[in-house]
Length: 451
Image 1: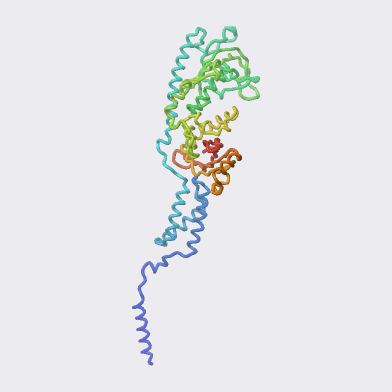
Image 2: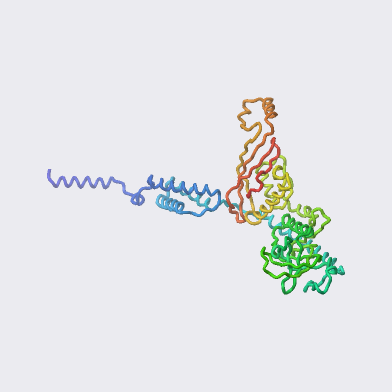
């Protein structure tokens, strides 16, 4: 066969190959449409690490680290390279959810949720108006006393008057600062008003008059308005009791010069714009603040819940507990707490101590709480092993076992989340423990737990 024939046949075959071969699309020329196993496994591995960190954050916002950013970069590259691959799309959607979750658990905060903060301001004004009216009346009455000292400055010189002539006289002292100007002298406590150039008055903190008035002030801050700066400038109405030579210096080591001053026994403390606390030694609690007698009647108009149903669920009881704190309903707050946690005076003092902390947190850190999943277990008594026993025992047998087993005590473990005024979760979920006996009402055991 001649060379010309071979060449001609070869050209014909190559032409047929070209004609019969399908043409490549632009996508085929650019590479495969499906990612390789190594590309997918690498992205999945880093995304799994990202997911674990989000889970450990328990809804708190977290800052993206190197691994999390690397996971997002890998999935971004896969999405751009293989836009229609279902496995890549699944990774992309999961990455989006994790990214959103890493910013923290967020909810919408409606105006109704923060009503309690505005209501506190309304209460503050109601009680402040009452305090101002009573203070004005008290001053008018004091000025009618012929022994009232209208001009306290400069103080009457000790050499110009006998102590007996000063004892019992009423006086109003402005710029009374407690505890900023508190000091001790030989075991006694005072607050000084004045200065070396003006002269001094020493307000006696050792008397029942002071204790009664200050205790009334503290009740006001706990039950009406906690936003009262204790180092502010107050006004004090008092009676002169004696003349003393003291060193008005707060430190234990006294280096200042002793000063003469008239000691004053408190009658009333006026905190402008807030309250008036009056000493009343005849009263069992030693004093009162303006509006205290009608406080519950005034506050009840702001309560959203006033009682606890016998069939309350653990989650609902935590909602009521939070509402009692936010609305300053101390009686309802106590009703939420397990009776064993409020049996003694010391236990009740602890309840009050943690009430103050709960007030601070709801005023400062968070505005809403959401109880989450609940797990109930039987700690003592029949039923501890669960419903498996019910399958094998008759009702008479179960009743007999209940009689000899004693009280059935159940415990509910409830996770609770808190959210700030922006709707962002505050901190990690907290665990509350509640108990009930013989299927009675639920009570909170660890009431001191922050939300």
